[in-house]
Each structure stands twice: as C-alpha cells, then as structure tokens.
Amino acid sequence: MYFDKLRAGAQSTVSKVILVLIILSFALAGVGSYVTRPVAEVAAVVNGDDISAQALENAYRNERARLESQLGPQFSQLLGDPQYVAQIRRSVLEQLVEQRLIDQKVDELALYASDEQVRNAIRALPEFQQDGRFNNERYQQLLARSGLSAEQLRDNMRQDLSRQLLLNALLGSGFTLEAEAGWLDRLNRQQRDAELVRLPLADFSTRVELTDDEVTAYYEQQPQQFQRPEQVKVDYLLLDASAVSADDIDEQAIVDQYQANLAAYSQPEQRKVAHIMVNKGDDARQKIQAIAERLKAGESFAELAQAESDDVFSGGKGGELEWMEQGTLDPAFDQAAFALTEVGEVSDVVESDFGLHLITLLDKRDSKTRPLDEVRAAIAERLAQEQAANAFYEQEQRLAELAFEFPDSLDMAAQELGLTVTSTGYFSAQDAPAEINDPRVLTQAFSGELRSQGMNSELIELGNNKAAVIHVTDYRQAAVRDLAEVREQARELALAAKARELTAEAAAELQQAWSAGEQQQWLAEHELAITELKDVTRNSEQDPTVLEALFAMPEPEQQPSLRALELAGGDQMVIKLNRVTTPEAPSEMLAQIRQGQSGLQGQREYQSLIAALKAAASIEYRRLEVQSDHF
Image 1 (cartoon, rainbow, N blue to C red):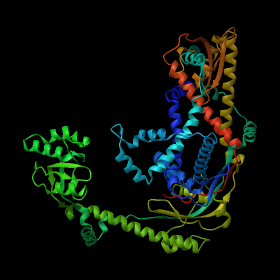
Image 2: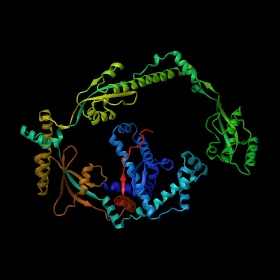
Image 3: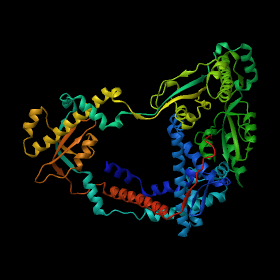
Image 4: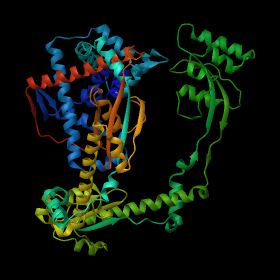
C-alpha cells in the first residue's frame, strides 16, 4: 500500500539516493571502461558525444555478472531467450545515455569539485580504510590490482563528485510542508469500523444452466480464450554422454595418474608461528632488541605481542599466524620461521619488507604423501569423467559435421553415431517434450529462418555433456480452435462466467437492500451472515484487496457508504463502512514521514530532469551487438 512505500522512502535518506546515482559509472561501465582503449564502433551518439562499443561491452559484461550472481542457474536459462538478452543490452545502453546526459549538463553548468573535495572523498572510501582510518599501503595495493593509476582514480572521482553537485542541488530541493506530512501521518493511523458480507461463487455456480446456443455464443464472443499457439513438429537427435564406471578404469592408468601427480597428493611441511613486529623507523632496531631482551628475561611472548607488536591484527591473538608452507611469505621471514626446530624457540631479529620481527615456533607438521589406496577411488572417478567427456566431445564434433554435410535429414548422422531419430507430434513452446524443453532448443524450433530453409539446426549445446540437433518437419500458425474441439472447455468457461455474473448481481441486490435498511431479510433468504470489523488499520491482518477497498471508501454521512468488489477466485464481497476515526495529535513518525516524502519528491525531480534532457537532446541509437557473450 501507499504508506508502506512511504515508510520505505522515509528510511532511505536523500544522500543514499544520491550515492546510488553517483556510482552508476562504476556499477555499469566498470573499471574497464576507464582503462580500455575505445574501438571505432559506436553504440550511441548523445548530442555529438560518442558512447563507444567498448564502453557498452564493459557495461553489458558487468550487468551480466551481476544478474548471474543474483539469479543463479535460472539466469543461464534466461540467456537462451534472445529477446531477454536484447532487453538487457537496451537497458544498459539507456543507462549509459542517461549518464552521459547528466555529465553534459554538469559541464554546461561548469560544476567542478575541488582538489580538497576529491582528496577527502578518496580517503573516505571504505575500500581504502583499515580499522576505520585511511591506509596508504592498502590504497596502493588496490590501485595496482585494479589497473588504475592514482591520476585516473582522481579524475574519475572528480567526475562523480561534480555530478553529485548537480544531484545535490536537484534532490535537495525536494521538500514537504509540515501540514502535508501531518495529514499523511494522521491518515496512516486512521481506524475504520465496517461490516462485511462474503458471497461465495460456489453458491451461485450450482444455479447456472446453459443451453448449447449460449455455449456457442460464449465461444464466438471470447475467441482469445480458445487460441491455439503456434506449433511445430520436429525430428531430433539427442547426444547424451554415457557415464563411464570407475570400475572400468584400468589399474595401470590409476597408478600412472598417481605417479604423475604426486605433488597433488603430498602435504608439504608446515609451521605455525607467532611473531612480534616493529614498523621500520629510526628507533625500530633499538625497540625490537629491547623486546628480545625482555623475552630472554622470561616474559611471555604472547603478552609482549599483544602489548608491543605493530601488527595489531595478529597481536590481538598473541602474535599467532595461520599455518604456513615454505615459500609462501616474505623470503627472510620464511627462512627464519623454517630454521626453528623446537617448539618455543625464538629467532634472532629478522628484517622483512614489512618491518623487524621476532618469531617463535608454536607447532609443526612434517611433510607426508597420501598412499595410493587412500586416493585410488577418487582418481578412478576423475579418469572415468574425463573418458566420458572425451568420448562426448568426439561424438559432438562428428554430429555437428554430419548435420551440416547432410542438411535435409538427420538419418545419416543417426546411422553413423548409433543414435535414434525421435519424431514429435505438434507442440507449442509451452508444452514441448521434456527432452528438448530447453530455451536454446525452442528458440531454434520456432525460428522462421530454420523453418523456411528446411535444414538441420546447428549443434545445440545443452550442458552436462548433452547436445541436440533438430529438424523442423511441419508448422502450424496460431489459430482459434474449432468449437467441436473445445466445446467442453467452452461450456466450463461459460458456466463460470455466468456464475460470476449471478454473484455480481446478488452483490448489487444486497447493496440496494442495505441502503434501504432491508439487509437482514435479504441475508436470511440467501443464508448469509455479516462479519464485523472493529478498529481496522492499514496494517491489520486482512485480505489486502479488502483493506485497499475499505480505506478507499468515503466516510458515511447521510447515506450509507457501501461498496462491492470481486475477490480472488470469483467470490463477491459487499462492504459497509460505519465509522472513520482519524487521530488529531501527530505521532513520533511525523519527522520520518516528512523526510521520506522529501526523498520521494527528490527522486521524482531526478526522473523529470532525465526526461527533460532526453526531450531536448539529439540521441542516435545504432544497431550494435555486444562483442561476446562469454566471460
């Protein structure tokens, strides 16, 4: 309901809205759009400014990754629908166009974020912070990992902040009068008393009688309900890799695989150590030597690590680090850690790229190799899967060749590969046979091009070592089914329609009787009863349809306030509103409602700005396919 949306808007501050809009350039175009050289192709031209094919490619890939993460396996099925893919591409391109329009408006108004604003914004990014403070080392590492230079990040941030200046002025201009917010607050807490009468559809269905002429009339008046969708008949070959049993794998192959991959079954020597670290500086060596002397005097390594180590994270755990293998840490640190032989032994001072360390050995694990008997089953299973996949790949390639070389029929491919051609009856996209009920197959089956050419389809990969080739043998256009074919369906639908009509007429009769004060007699004749509702609010546990209707009814004055509505399933409900109670005093929600209304107003202003910019702009969309649908 409206007030649910209002409360949601109240919890989202204007700054949150602004933030969502600001990060559009990162969320859609991604880092790649800033560092990849544009190609010559153009996806759109906005007031003379090109949006390159490369920018669209980057934005499309990032949107695909986001949708795949959000929808999971369902997304792979959706990608089989070309219309769905085209819709994603259009949406991404439209958002890039809107972003470019905003940037052009920013340039026109000469809005410019200062160096200090840019610097403060970068330092405030949570990605660059550690323990709530800006960490320069983390900043440098993340920049290097993303391929961005400090200058590129600065320019990108300046662009976003300059855009924010415009959005702040726009969204911050939205406001709500206190009187308006107060009225909304009181409406939200309004209470209503009512009486309800439910008229079940089933009670009237038993009273309906239909003639054949009435059934025919309904069929002729509602042809869309008897539409047969377009249908096809196809022949198809389904290639499904047969699983190879692990029991069939040769023992010598298992042994050879084990010997060739001994490293994968070996556990190298591991050490668990703790350390105390002092950051490099003029007095670093003096400080670490002082700590070493205190250790020699018998103080606890763990307590000194907690009190003195500059590595705050490990220091809180007594300096303890995770299990380590040789060659995984800084060379100097690594060499000193593996030189320790006895638990409790402490190293001399070690200098690494990170600082000065004292290291103690907490535990160690000797290297070991898992015996063949322990891993034989896993090796056999993996070899079986590989053999099945290899056999499938060879058959898949040959099936694709044969389907192309003999395009008029699947018989030759079936004969050579030992497969069986399956012929279907007519089916639509909604009732395809289970084996080929896949969006990738159905797209081909209902393709006008494939049908007009009368040729085999290309190989259709279905995943999980399955593939298919189809050949359309016949096609029927969508059409209205003959009455003889759907007479029983038409009778059932006509009966239902007549029952709903009778139920609605009865609801209208009850309204008239209620208005005249004769409802009790009418209800008794129809064996129906009144349900009373007291102090109902917009958040009461009632049917949402009933609540919406009840709070849309006018307050009763001289005449009763009555309304009839149809419920899900066809039942009718007659509502009589008796009393409306609206509180006078404001609630603690007043400020939040006012803020939420202002936020909603700001969002409407933003949409109005985009609409105005588009109306005044010269925008040319060019037909452009994204370069690749694979990551």
